[in-house]
Image (cartoon, rainbow, N blue to C red; front, side):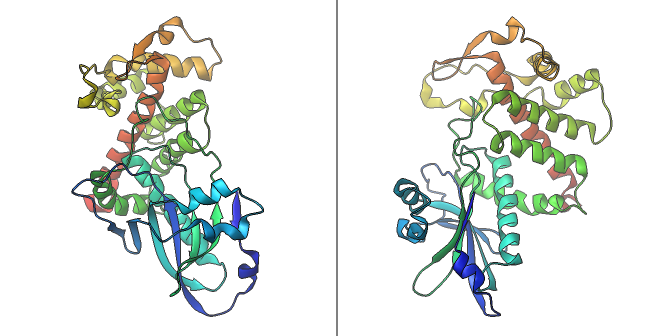
Length: 322
């Protein structure tokens, strides 16, 4: 859902003003390497936003959103920020900025998936302070994160990786530049997080993306898919993201190579509307000591495999590799 200041939108003229588009991100406690402002790409930064947004800036929409929601918008502390010039009112440059931020946010999700949904806030940069004229509410406010990714937050190393990866990602995101199979894989990767809270639909989305990358647009059979998962991704530890030294528990990896048949069995059962076999309902403990069905770990595994596969393709095809 989008909220615009219609009065400002109708006051179109040829005057050029400075604008901004913000999308909030989840950041863990900053470390000694953290920088308050990092330039990622041209006019795009990741910044600490204290003082830029306040709850009062959203009072214009108090009849449509609650005080709690306005307080949450005013409490955003870290965000991707795109500064650009445009006309007074809203035009093509605003749409372009939102699309640009969406691509950057998806790239960040490839670097480190978090539970933060995509959201944009747009406004004017004025001497007396920022003025918000438009913002969106996420379609899904609480993302169903895979069991191994619930601790994820953005850290300084992730910001550095985003700055490194973003030029190639933006290059390959253009219809005339990137291959269709890769763009489709990226779409299904993001849709698995942002379009549904249903774990079975997430898994199917991520498996479609995996097959898109592996097939590169040609038909492949189950045997070839299994072989490629073994050889290309078999050493990935599905549970690695959740492991922390301070848990005081021994590391218990769950390698993709040992779960390939289970991944395909789960895919076949869901796609062909078959009951799940009991083998996929076996319980496994996480590093908190909580138990989850194997199917929950396979869901996390599909997301992680697709993440690795897309990043490999970006490294292989991006302009920096030419």
